[in-house]
Length: 444
Image 1: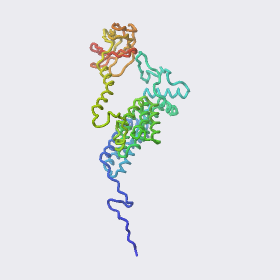
Image 2: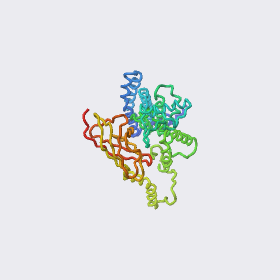
Image 3: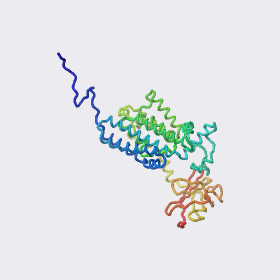
Image 4: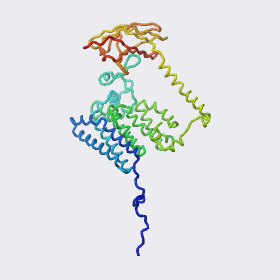
């Protein structure tokens, strides 16, 4: 006698284990994966071209990354299971990490910030003071000068200590700023991995897209910017931030990461109060937090601002809080510069200026000690030498100055480019500008 098998037979709605089959991925998930994948093309050709002529092994790795990008892009459009698409998200992340490391291997010279961090790491290992020590030999040769309002330049290290402390143990890996750029590149990669793990599964490709896609942040990593280290440390703080204050190990980790980010670069100090305010406002949480977090979010509103009939009070409070900022912006936009400058004459050589004669009138109520420079854009060059003219212009008076370019000549731009003369003073802190009108530039 045989007993009938009473177990349900597999159907289209169940497998042999009784579990529901993996559903098809959402269309927006496919699009996000595809965007992250396509973003890896940007900058990859330049890396491959460099590697093909110098490092054949790296060129082969980049070629494999090309194949991975193409294959993943096709599969992202045709796979039928969410689990498979999630694995493709991981493949895109690994490809992006590989390309970032290949690009670092080819270009790790760094920027001026990386050079400063490397020098600070050497001084730190030698037991020397890092802060407040001028290093003038570094500047002007790969490290941009930082002008001050007093007419001089800052020759010191001006970043928090964490990047140099992370760089110090890696100084053995190579010459120049290779250690500092490796720290920021690895920090970006680790930040991308952490964000990828913390985000909900369908959103994980956003981590690849934001951190490693389009070649933007990886370039800053290879330049050795301390801000990249701070950015990576802020990832665990920002992702899932509505859960802050709930207690447990997660809060300790977020607090430690926020403190470390503040020790890496100054920008997180600016972010910290807005991050706390964002717990109330709820910043980009629609992507990183579940809907129930919005319903239970803390609302630190006074009693007179609560309720449906307090709209007028809420609007008045918002305007009151914005008043100082609006007043400052209005004053900055409508105020007039204290110095009115006029170019009286110019000494010229072929295609360049050798000197300027400037008349400066102090329209303000305070004496000013001006420092002059010429610019052709939003940046700033070195200060010009004052060959003749008073150090200080008294209030409501004028003076005549003979100015000489710092390198002996100031190359004139092409016709149509705006040239501005700028005057800075430290006490009071002011900036005055005026156009420099010259005759047509002669041909060299």
